[in-house]
Image (cartoon, rainbow, N blue to C red; front, side, top):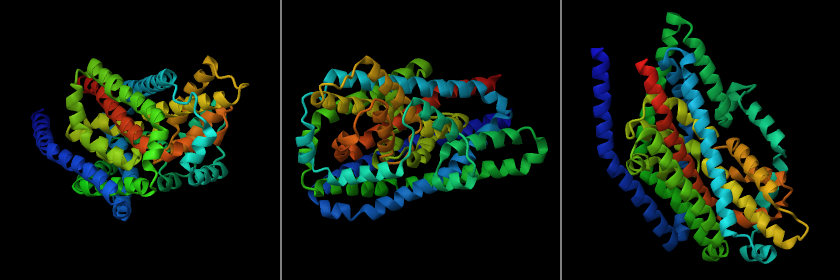
Length: 446
C-alpha cells in the first residue's frame, strides 16, 4: 500500500511539473502557427519551400503510431489484470463514440438546413471561377482506385471486416489501426490468463510502452518547428495560387456553415458532456489539451496527432493511463465527430445545388436521414489521414444518387476545413478518455 501511495504521489508531482511547463510550450506552438500564417501570406514562395521540414515532423509522428498503439493497448489490458474487467469501460467508450457522432451529424444537418449555403448557387459558373481542373484530376484518381461500398449495407459489411486482418504485418505497414487494436486486446487478454509464464513478455510490453511515450515527449520539444513548417507550406501553396481570397469568398457561406457546426460541437456539445459527466472545467481541459489540438490543426491527421493526444491527456489533463491507453487509440480510428458533421453538411450543400438545377430531383426528409446514417457509418471507417474524407464523401453521395460532379466545388478549401474537423476529432477523443476514466477508477476501488 505504501509503495502504491508513493508511486501515486510521484506521478502527481510529475504531472504538476508537466502542467507548469506546458503553458510555455503551448505559447510556442501558438506563436509558430501565427508566424506560419504571416510568413505564408507575405512570402508564399519561401513558405512552400519549408514543406520538407513539415514532412519530416509528420513522418516522425506517424513512425511512432503503430508501435505506440499496440504497446499502449496491451499495457492497458495487462494493467487491468483480467480482460473481463474491460467490459464496462468498453461499453461506455463505444456508447460515447456512437452518441457523440450522432450528435455531430445531427448538428451538421440542422445547421446546413438553417444556413442553406447551396441554395441559388450556379454550379457551372462556380466551377469555372474556382478553376477546379487540378482537383477534378484528384477526384478521377480516387474514382479509379476506390471500389468502395455503395450503400449502408455494404458500409456495415466493410466495417465488420475492418476489425480483422489476414496479415498483421501488412496492417502494420499500412497503418490500419483497428485490426491492430483488436489483435492487441485479444493477445494481452490471453497473456492475463497465463500467470507467471507471461511475466517476461509483460515486462517487455510495459517497457516498450514507456519508451514510446518518452520518445513522444522528445518529439514534442521540436513540435513548434514542425508545426511552423507544416502550416507555412500548406498556406503558402494556397496563397501562391493567386486566387486564394476569391476561393474563400466564393464558398464563404459554405465555409461559415461548416465552421459554425464544428464550433457548436466542439465548444458546446462536447464541453457540456465533459462537465455533466466528469465535472471537469471545460476551459481548463482545453488548456490541458491545447498542444494536441494545435498539432491536429497543423497535421490534419488524427493518427499523427494520437501520440501527442495521449501525452497531453495523461501528463497534463491527469486522465489515468489505463483510460488513455485504451480509449484514445480506439477513438482515433472510430470516433470521427468532425468528419461525420462535415460530410453530412457537405452532402446536403451539394444536394441543395443540384436541386436548383434539376427540378425532378427530390431531396426530402428521407434522403436527409439516409445521408445522416451513411455519414455516421462512413466516418467510422474513415482513415485518420489528411483528406481521407474524400473517399467517404463519395460513399455518402452515392447513397442518395447525387452526382459526383459537384465534389470538386468543395476541394479547393477542403484542406483548410480538414484541419478544423481534425481538431474537433482530437478533442472528442480527449473528452471520451475523461468520460471513460470514471469507470476505470471504479474498477480500481472494487
